[in-house]
Length: 282
Length: 315
View 1 (cartoon, rainbow over the protein chains, first blue to last red):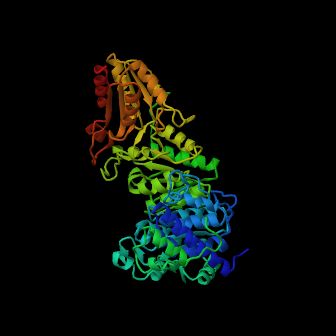
View 2: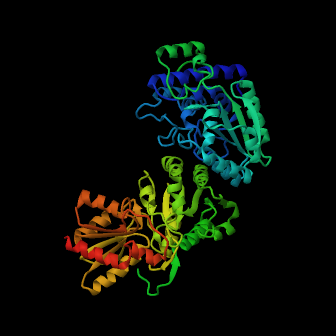
View 3: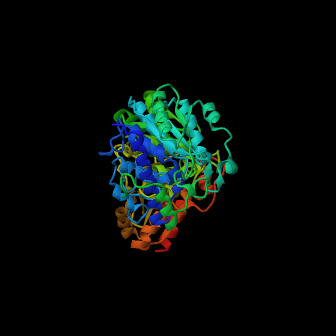
């Protein structure tokens, strides 16, 4: 049963709280990109994915699959996985601590349900997603494979190997979202290694390209639904998702600086005040 | 073990034949190749199972990620390209998406070592065993002839987890039977009491030839085929050394990081023993005929003989 916009917005606020609390607790991690993608993860995991979170199955036979390529935004990923039932929400408090399943970057190594591939070293997730997609084609499955990449991540050459492969092999059950927040560790993406126009780039590779405002919950819901309807038409689908890094926490917005630093006690208090508890803290 | 006739075939053809056979037996087996289908002898598989064969183009990084994805979904992917492009070029992809993620991917690598010949050092990787054996959980196999490569190719499909299978380009004597292959189980090729030669890959043949000559000179050399460098057959190695008390290691690889390095670690922890290493000594290769290159870089039959004598002298 799909969540209403009101319910989704409540979950978004809660996930923002999870993110800043996790990162604050261990004074490490990546809040900026996590906050920017909170609406996307919330809609995807609550309303879009056809998945069995109660009984995690690595092979995802007859399930939709999500692959996180930019693994450093693990806080939002872990919150989304926990709140959709893959593991207890209380486990979020172990983030980045010794012996945790919630490693700094996501991994299968500790057996965390919901994670199917390690990520962190950038540029690899689209290839992995293409492999899962190819397997679903081979098995005549109609389920979809979603992958999220950062825009800075597109600087990795492997991404474009996979972009070529997916189009050449008509992987039209693959939906690749790019988090276009325009920021990376050293500064703004346009200054570090600009892309000019991403839409025409993906279209030139023969992908079907749509766009959305990743911080508008209704647009995210509508566009992800539309992307599903576009599948099966002979082309892989790219969603260019405009987001604001740090969205929902005012002092983290408008800069690349909160890519990978934690808030202090005062900053945490401010972030939590801006996002009051809705469904309860872990 | 040794056949009377010395028919020659390339080990890569053993891979191609094994891949085809296991493809017939196991419908989960799929194959990926980065524009080297003919070189890797994957055509038979491609022709028989076109839907289970994925042409990757010249894009090895994507091939490794794709293989990890296919394995995630329950397939048993075999990747095929040259050893250089199967390891060094894609080390991080293998490390994160395959080894750390413990994916059931079989990385199959041809044209390893000096014996690819005239293409020269850009393609003659001599570091691949070291790169692969350092990865936690990675199985590393370097079979010695056509039959063993075919058997190994089929056996690794039944082992769950990442495997690096290394083979080569040149036609090479066939001297093992093809009945079975047990991962991690050293094979005694020749009995002897004065020195043990642990060899892998093409150098097993050179070691057997060396042992024949040594016998004519009154030296009894044991030859053990270490086709699996990881996991190493510790028990077989320690047993053998307990008797002969000196060792030669022989491989088409750098000394650093190869079979000899693994055996030295084992022996130094258990039975400190004189070891002479037949391997490439911190050098790149060059163009030339395989036999010329093996001689120039100290991997010829005469080099194994000399190493055996040095090892015995150090007892």
